[in-house]
Picture 1 (cartoon, rainbow, N blue to C red):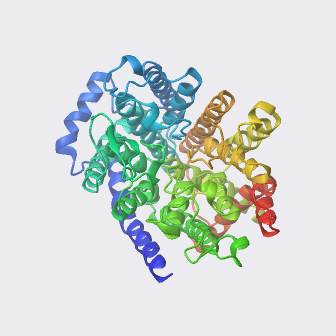
Picture 2: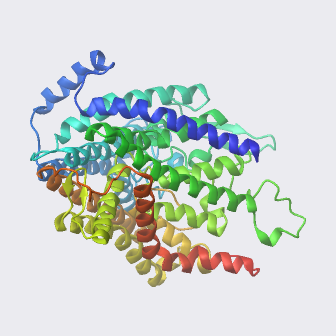
Picture 3: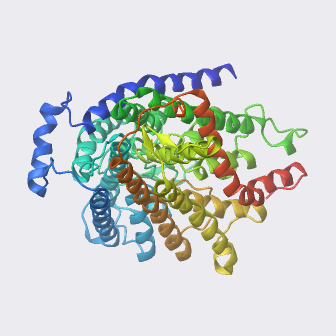
Length: 568
């Protein structure tokens, strides 16, 4: 127990220590200030602008910013779709893999373009090295940079005073990749190779096991993709078992490095936000909100998994190490719980243990982390602008309670902003509840569920929660390669990504054009512990009221069934 707590404390200290360092650096990148990497990368940046015909000084109205984003993402989807469909004709395919089917290529291309990285396929048994590197890894960079660019634009909207532009999407995208994602990915890739993660273009190795059996050991350029998949909260595994695979995550040090990379940029964005608006207290208030919700979720999952299965309490089954089903012995409950919490709060989706084998309530917490909107640190960029949406709702509700026009950072929050915030929030229940309900009504689709009863319903609910929340992790046990799921999950990924981004850019554009009003005695302070608690309350109430009935039919019902002696 003491060792477990020390591991958690060390991880938390690392995140807290690195947050202001990277957050300040990202502020300088988005502000266009000179950084230590400028002598090396500035010529490359200028070359990109020249080749693409971009004027780095030209600002964009929020509509043009959104249009540029959608255009770049559509082109990325089309190129990735073609790569997956034509991979048998492309180089670096030593295993001779054939093309992906149209529906699976549609799903996979959307998945990686939307920063979801949901995988309805086995990486080492489906994709060539060309598809992994030129297709998936490139989109890992672009999709992560897209979210970070949107975050920068939204923050400029909150900070701006009677301005009409939010920056330039092409500039934000370029600077994010060059100055943030690429250097950290190179560093992470080198460290992972030092820990034994492969990075090669060799053919798979045939091996004979100690029992005399035959085994094919997959190879490939894994380290590079794993570094950016974690750093960019993408999460898509090079191998099917993801970060539970010994080649993706071979040592305790690689496990710690990947965990830090999952939360590093989302946490740092709190400081970036504080510096961009000129008030660090606001950034740390958001960090505190995220941190409290993260620690509560971690405590719940850890305690539930350490408690084990009550049906085995009187049996001759040792549960001293907790519920170890679906977990790597080398990681144990603490690192499995820590990873499950980090990956579901941060829109990452990678796993080092199977969530399908968690206790019912342990799986519920992981699912609820996503359903809250992936704003507890959240994805790179998407976490901070998602949290700002809840801030808008919180100050609106607080304004109603005291009978004043709500304000945030000196800007009046009016009907337009609140309507746009509600519109963005609706994307989650529509994608999660609406499509899950449709899936369980279709006989052919129900047949894809592995388990009966509430656990089978949880498999469906988790899948569409993960897709709409752009998380990408799976509960397991679901035949996700069925054409209905590949198509419906792909549409949910688009809904969860773009139906959130566009209203948030519209809110930012609306606020940027407003003048600030002076602080008065009736202004609600938004950097105090009281506001942090109020914000947490709004987040939990919105998530709880929306998804509790569905959770009651799945993991909650399964928990009570397990307590009465029935398993699924």
